Amino acid sequence: MDAIVVFFGGVSSLGVSVVMPIVLTIIGVCFGAGFGKSLKAGLTVGIGFIGLNLVINQLMGTDLATGVTAMVNRFGLQLSVMDVGWPAASAIAMGSVVGTIIIPLGLLVNVLMLLTNTTQTADVDIWNYWHFAFTGSLVAIVTNSVAFGIAAAIINEVVVLVLGDITADQVEKSLGLPGVSIPHGFSGAYAPIAMAFNKLIDMIPGVRDININVRTMQQKFGVFGDPVLLGTAIGIIIGILAGYGFLPGENPSFLTLGVSMGAVMVLIPKMAALLMEGLLPISDAAQTFIQKHFQNRGKIYIGLDSAVGTGHPVTLTLSLILVPVTVFLAFILPGNKVVPLVDLAVIPYMFVLITPIVEENGFRGLLIGIIIIAVGLYIATDLAPYITSAAAQVGFDMGGAASISSICDGANPLSWIIVRLGQLGNGIGLVVPAAGAVALAIWNRMRIMKEAAELHAAE
Image 1 (cartoon, rainbow, N blue to C red):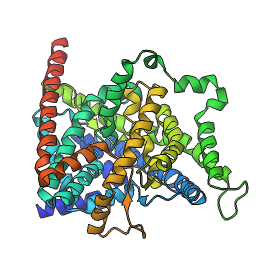
Image 2 (image 1 turned 180 degrees about the vertical axis):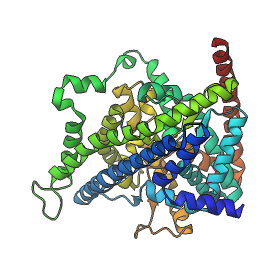
Image 3 (image 1 turned 90 degrees about the vertical axis):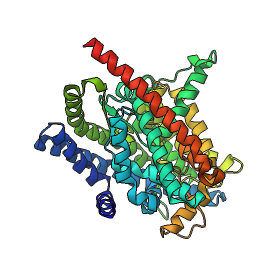
Image 4 (image 1 turned 120 degrees about the vertical axis):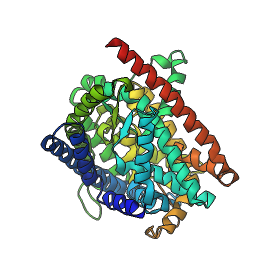
């Protein structure tokens, strides 16, 4: 077991841009795509991740976060919890005891669910198992039990895999990704919320008829509705509020930040397209293999990072609009203590599944986004003591901050529910989410077998 943990820990430490090419090459060969074709596909995906991370980490995680920090200092706004971002959150999660075993454990759980037909998703995105480890590490702290932490991580994974299954058709329709699901611990957590609010809005006369079509809006306003100009305008506004001048001095020019945000709107879709280009040969080979050897299993999806959906024009547009809204909410919401900084860059990931669920309705997406961000700030505030404690346990350098949190996964509603229930009765409360996960898996099996029977009858 120690050797397995060390092996997977070493593989994970290589980072997603190296791990995904290796994993996808192996999977492609196993599915009969051939070594050369699989290797090229895997490397294309890895390059796409490198490009995507460069854009998000530099342009949003650094340039945008620096502008927001300057704005906070300029207006003398006092918030005591520092948003350290998902890179720090993932490091804290994978540095925990739960994190050391999460990859082999997560793969085992996924295989068992595939064998029992309780999921259709083969989740090859092993890097993002850190989301499950994050939940588990917090539960281990509140219960003082590694065993309860491991149980929490498994519960989280089961729920997210089922959510990946039931949103796969909408992902294919909206993102053009056949044979792909998105069992992402952060993005998936917002899918049930979007579904609930979508149904609620359908029941409200008048409101249900409102539809802001972002694509049509862009066409109607011509060049001024172009995502590039929208991103540039938002960047300029934030730069002016941050006190940046026209010419660079002690601070960058507000025009520099404007062009950077315009670049985000251009480069992220291009990097996402590169990811899709690499994934399609593997996806096609997987579907052919499954149809040939497992005709009674229905569809099987390849589970991928939600990064593949961040380039959607509606997702990107709504995300950039919500950047200043998030900062504004952080300062006006009573009781919030988190200043959103680094993880402003993850707002597109938050919307990857929301956009397909609301069928690209900009009004619904924006309304749901404001609600989940407002609630998320309170969740991030509530979990800050435990995230700070987890950071201290793994020796994470908090840069002098007394208390830290993040939007990803510190504002994750699914993680918060599991952690808070796990705290009840010193872990006994985990029975509730565990029972819910089992019930969800059984329901999913019934749905999968019905789908398989229908497909078999159609043939």
